[in-house]
Amino acid sequence: MTMPRWETDFGAEGGLFRRLRAAAAEAWSGYTWHPFVQRLSDGALPLPAFRTYLIQDYLFLIHFARAKAFAVVKGESLQAMRDKAAAVLAILDETKLHLKYCAEWGLDEAAVIATPESAETVSYTRWVLDRGLFGDILDLEVALAPCTVGYGEVALRILADPARQVEGNAYQSWIDTYAAEEYQAMARAAALRIDALGVSHGGEARFARLAADFAEAARLEQRFWQQGLDAARGDNTVHG
Image (cartoon, rainbow, N blue to C red; front, top):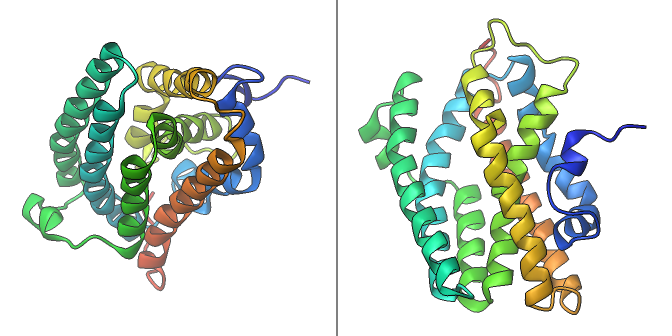
């Protein structure tokens, strides 16, 4: 039987990333094939749900950049520090693009910036920052990887979804962003970095703690999706 791409594209067989993913199978599946994702795929996601997600994702990106900055401080080599510094700048540039994308959905830039962080955004971002502050580079990268690699898997799952709606799907541009080879290559590189750090930083001896962190990140990602659906609860308007 041919395995789906999301089972084979990210990380090496026997490497730390795939082992972490397998150990967190239930939480990981609940994240990468959450009802929010399924509704993105079939185009039936309520517009208020997507707008809530877009706003909170912008606020999330700010703290994601801060967490990546920890990776500069804790980088294991000069090259790693350079790579992470470039990643921080890329995320900060992405915040500008994200605001433009929000505008396309009728979200005013000033209103987006002024929106308070939700409890879900606060809990997720501060948890990642905590791992960066108190852990080493492997702890931090394991906390970050579910976001980067997970969105790559989400896109592959959508592409393989029999219920996927392409024509007339208002969310197709979002899907295209994460299905694009540029993003997929970044996700594959993030998984392989976990594999490499697992070898260089004693991943085997620390597996139980790393697995717990990986699963927690997946659960926090689930709650991040869910807040959009919760915001749209009671709204019968379906976008798509």
